Image (tube, rainbow over all chains, first blue to last red; front, side):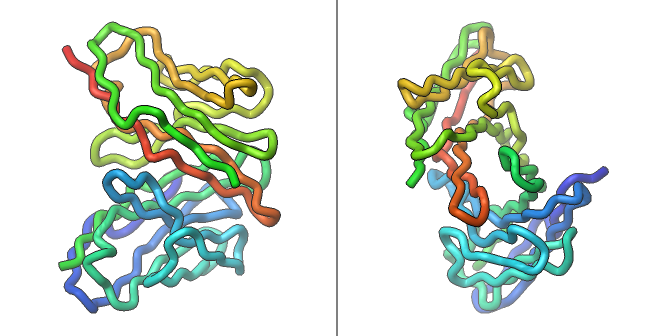
Length: 113
Length: 115
């Protein structure tokens, strides 16, 4: 039982390049989330998926797209990376209802030059 | 709208002394509350959660938190700090937006433990 996995762990991009961050969970959770973490700003929600087939914007969706490929996988795409997207990205998942505690992946550290 | 305020951005304690990390929240509903911990260059781990079953909640690694509705607080405590407790701590409230529950995160408290 791996929990939530993310790839890659580290990435360096040039401005304008594109990339996809991958996330998968093996806990049979319905909901999945993408956050970014910047110094002094805590965690900010980029997008989330309440269930397979649905996605919704969070606080800071501009410059990102997501795909809920199936129940297990939720990817985040940067179409044209900008230096302002330099951050640590976390994927999380949670079960249905209840208290919605979220389980996190190890993070992806992205630098955009 | 719900919100979370962590009253201290940095806390420094000596090893073996008590830890107090303060959190206030605002909520229109009966809230669900969490504390997460993040060790340097690591992911986030759930420390404990308040689920309305008991106001004093015990978590991992000797931490506990008390839900005080009258004070809208959910402070995190530990009787005796260890060096391994040095980390970033986040207080979180769960918000229902009509379709889904979302987490509202505090900005974090950095805990330093001095030998």
